[in-house]
Every structure is written in structure tokens, then in C-alpha cells.
Length: 255
Image (cartoon, rainbow, N blue to C red):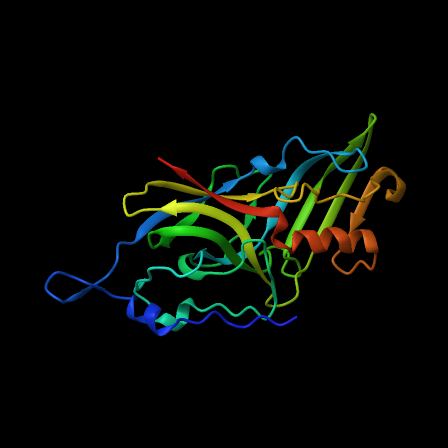
């Protein structure tokens, strides 16, 4: 399936500048909000096979985060040329909330560990006021494991039996995730922070990231390990979910 590029219509381009009372162009207000690691999506979850999951490592290397408003937006310049806000979607996985125009971003490459970095600020995002609907990012590589985009490690427990597990994930080059839910209204006076969350349970469908994984049956000496070059249907099902929009979300904590 092919996804084209978002484009700006002439009315949108005209709206990039707001006219002041004297006819001089002026920039629309920009809102700076911290983006923080939110690990609350990892707790209290059980798979379809009855395993309780506890993660001790939930690492990911996302690139720039882009925030999109739904439908036609009242656009304004972020101080960059318009072309910089266009996102190629050739490798995108469309989300439930995919669509709209990019009017906010958190620049740079990042690494997060939802299991150990609760509340850590990843950086400051700049957004234009608007009604936001979704977020996008590209998968990069971990600094200490440049062959990997993500690493999940923890323990699966069922009826008193525990299995330690590791999943190592390498996203295809340029793989972009689109449509992670981010439903928030940002105003010029908004203060607060944006929580970036990995959710083991898909908030829309109720599916668990590790559904279908029979840890005990697959384990050797109570250990299960999948490397990035594993050729296994169980591994691919987890990899597919982790690279989709289903298990990520952002939310605004307005102060």
C-alpha cells in the first residue's frame, strides 16, 4: 500500500501568516511543552494466555515526534520553511487517528526506557494552538546497540511459574509510525507537559502486546530470548505490534 505526502492547499499556505491590525504579518503564538516518559502503560496487564507481564526494560529509539491537528487547521509558521513540515509516509503504518496537518514537533533523536525513566523529560516540543489528534515518529537505533530500534526484557508469570524473556527489535530503515493517539486541545495559554506512553494493552482494541506468546512452551530453562534476526511467527507477531501505532499514545497534562 502506498501513502502519499501531506500537502498544503493554497488557503492553508495563506494562513501561515496572521495579519496584525496594521496589516503587518506576525507569527501565531507558539506553545512550548515538555515531553516526558510515561511508564504507566506497563502495569497491571495480563495476556490472552493468562501471563502477567512485568518489564524491567522497555527501550525505544524514536526520532523527531510530529504532532498533527485533525482536518483543516488554522496554520501558522513555526519559523521554518513550509517544506520542513511535510512528512514522507512511504514506510508509514496508518493509525486510527492518521491524517491532518503537522503543527507541532519535538526535534532530535531520542531514547526512552518506560520501565525505568518515569517522568524524565525528553525535551521541549513546540506546538501551535489547535485541536490535536495524532502523533508520528520514525524508528531510529539505540546508541549502545546500533542494530536495534527497541529492546523489551522482563518476566512472564502464570500460575506461579515464571519465564524471563527478551525481545530485540530492528525496524526497517526509515520505518515511520503514524497515527499514535494524541487527542488534546492546545491553547496559547496552555501550560503543562506531554506524556509519551507505551501501552502493553491497545487502548482501542484491547489486544495485549504479548498476546499469543506461550512463554512456558517456548522457554528453555525458564528463559526465552528472541534476537532481531529471529525467523519465528511468535516473534514476528510481537514485532509487528511494537512497530504499529496500536501501543503508543501521547496525552496532555495541563497545569
